[in-house]
Image 1: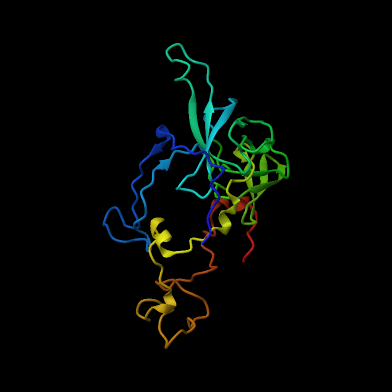
Image 2: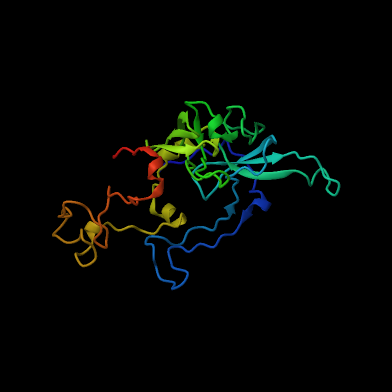
Length: 274
């Protein structure tokens, strides 16, 4: 078993105005109540942190007041606070707005971040891809302007800006795929925090149950009636040229992307096969 170093995080409870309860389906269909996704169930209760993946406050510096753990993602999150000018009907204390963002590696309490079309190339700042210099690491990347970041958001991940041409930015993804993204899309400078997460080991079954993961039985340990890999005396190979799912479909390495998907034209180089 290995753990994660939480000593850099701020010892405080989550911001009450930025959390909400989200009902979990735990693998069952809401319509029929039947299990539709295996190996899910249980787990400790947790509240969802409302993360700002987009950019609602432009050209306004925000101060990092806390670094926190988020049970819903592998990377850490940062609580930022904007100091807005008080309006006529609001006091100075009520004018401050707080948001959660995905924290980059190296961000500290007291640092300042800003969302702008062209901002300094410091970790945590968010700006348009067309204004980011070649070779810079970015994360939380948009695919459509104004829709919010959906790419590269897990712990220790970062994409690299390779080139700027004809209104598009060439980006090398963590999977080694190279694709074009519109230059008007926003991205955050830096790398997602908690890169040591890749070395994390659960260590025991009870910890997996707390995360909501039920036991996963190998197909080769089942009977032939239950799985294509099952059967045989003792520990035997699966007896197939390629592995299959419990329902007889190809598994492990088969391409699942729709061949005629319209965004295929933005992919310059496919990811490397492992």
